[in-house]
Structure formats: C-alpha cells, structure tokens
Length: 198
Image (cartoon, rainbow, N blue to C red; front, side, top):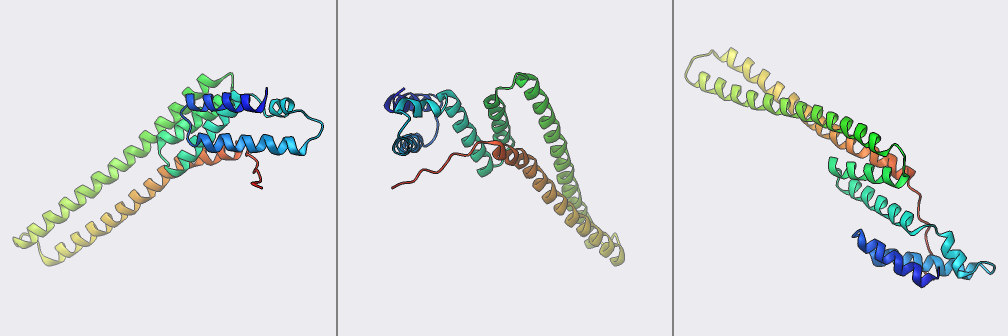
C-alpha cells in the first residue's frame, strides 16, 4: 500500500470512530513514513507502510490512548471503565466477555460499597448538625446545664470533624480506585516514537 492510500484509509477509519486530533495523527504517520523512507535505502515505500501494521490495530491503539488520557484528565468510574473495555478489546482476548462481566461486577460492587460508606458518613454529619442545633436550643431554653452543653457540643464537633476527614478519605479512595487501573493500562500501552520535525 502506498503512503497516500494508507493515510487516506487511516483518516477515514479515525473519522468513523470520531477520534480527536485526526490531523495531528495523520501528520505524525506522514512524517514517520517520510523519515523511514529517507532513512532506508533497501525498503520500498510499500514495505515501510506494511511494516507499520494493520490500520485497524493502529486505530484501536489510538482509541485506547485517548480513553486512557480522558480517564487521567477526568478520573470518573465511567472513564475508567471505558478505558478498561477498550484495552480488553485491543488485546483481543478470547475470554473478553466473561472477563468484562467479572470486572464489571467487581467494579459495581466496589462502587456500591464505597457509595454506601459515603452515604452513611453524610447521614452521620446531618445527624450531628441536628444534634448540635438541638443542644443549642435546649441550652438556650435552660433545659440542660452548662457542663452538659459544653460536653455535648465538644463531642459533637469532634465527631463532626472525624466524619469530614472520613468523607475526604473515602473520596480519595474512590479516585484511587479509578486511577489505579488507568495507570496499569498506560504502562502496558505501546508508546509512539517521536518524529523529528526537521
């Protein structure tokens, strides 16, 4: 396949999958092919293009790169799951569907557990705020002595602070849950070589 045909087919495949930065990708492969042609006296243009690999594999790797970048820029469960599914499809594993089901079930379970902990902590915070308001009203009406009021407010504020710290920790745990597999996939992704712009 000639360079122009390769780039044309690559562009149409990238457009079909709505890939970002198509022009930059085409420019990268154009320069890569040109550099290899200039650097090789024994390989023809067709051989150099053939050595780049199958266009569908190139497109799959580009999709994976972009999904991983999206998951790193905005670490959400959805972006992390998309990156994992794309990675598994790029690897073309014969056990893809059962593996996706297992990973999906584990991910949903983990998210449900973390979400339930977050909801419990938020509920505790609301209860503590309501209790503090109740103590203030009871003290203002003269229903509890000053010592009991100070103890109750101190205990409530301490528990309130601990709940906020726990909520922050759970949020960081959720973020790490999303970013860990993304980092793993990024390590396994083949790196594109830099092309000199001379």
